[in-house]
Image (cartoon, rainbow over all chains, first blue to last red; front, side, top):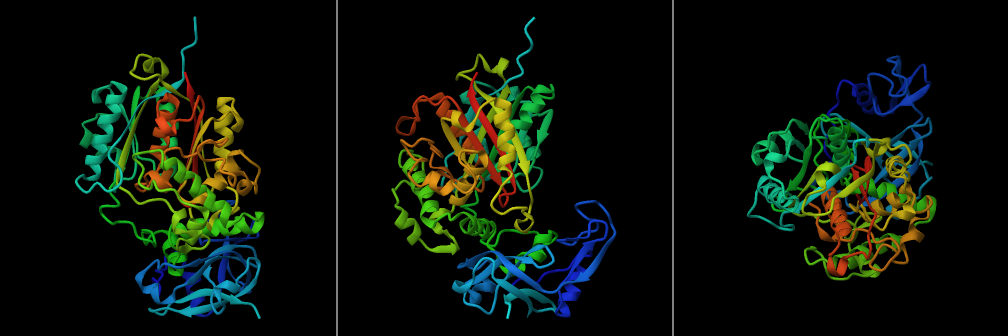
Length: 132
Length: 383
């Protein structure tokens, strides 16, 4: 089990959505662009007119690395595991894991889709696997 | 009447022992470096009225001032990782030009090897956004962040594992000529690629050392520098820039803010990359060198692999780079930055024996901090 994320006031809606198996990000109304990671104000225009939006969960692999040493002793059983930057279809880039595929088969640009991994403490962690 | 000379010079450099130094605390190691730098400059600690320090657990400049018995009227504990030291030279230059201090000490040290403090997952306080949005995915920090950027660079530009490995090979050739270097045995591209993969595409031999060590430099006005022990080394140009803090926020994984810091430094100095005789380019990882060389303008974007693959960075090459053996093979006590400045000053003074770059007049120092986050470029030359 990897380290458990501890939600903050900024990120609570993100983790609440993840608990329901969904990916919600903020969108700035004046900019009409996603704000990632969660903030109180848009980092582009400074507006606090942000709303949470359910995303499709579709994206593609922007970059990835196959990790051969555990970042945390609790991750040792998972080695090797894949850490990636995922480009979401709606236009934001976030870090995640790629699962349910042999690491050697992963390619940049490959379509992926969100799924969730259960952690302790009633938290679900959004991860990505091959799109069907 | 002649205008006042506003140029700034480095007049003293000093280091502690490097490597494994279990008989010294971090402040004790700093003390050795400070004493060496003061001696090198022919100055007393009472001459120091500006203090620049980072990397202590809290209030770096205050603690260093107290421990070393310095009473600064200008102090600066900016945290910019490996970029902090070229940045400190810029900040010291600004403070001296503004009359806020006259003679500045920059000091850094770490005992992270003896304390076995380094953790592969990094040390991310749980109040940072990274703690909940990156750490649960298990990246090695900073290694995996650089790995992601290198992976993207290889995809976009066809950069090969062999080209990246050649940087470790060239750096090791320099280290073989530095008796103080930690890793002095020559290495081949094949051996680099046969070393364990840590976070693809980064192999163990492409990752900087973990050492104990301290370094110090003394910066003052060129006017004050004139009558010192060594010929002054002048800060001809400097620039600082940043693009992000966390790797997921990096606007373009294959382009760094070195393009901005470098352009500013070269513009200020009235120089171009072709004028550089010797370069110290941050080598936390082999990839750091490659992308920085591109962004500093030594070659075009995407051509870094071809630029380094013929041994251009090694002894006898067209761009002697990381001539001490750098972070990969000389020392890397958490940050290399101050040792980059020290090596550049020593190359310009001359007399380094086997590793001396002949007729070195212009030196470039480029520091990178965080996860390719912050960049500081410094051009040094004769007064």
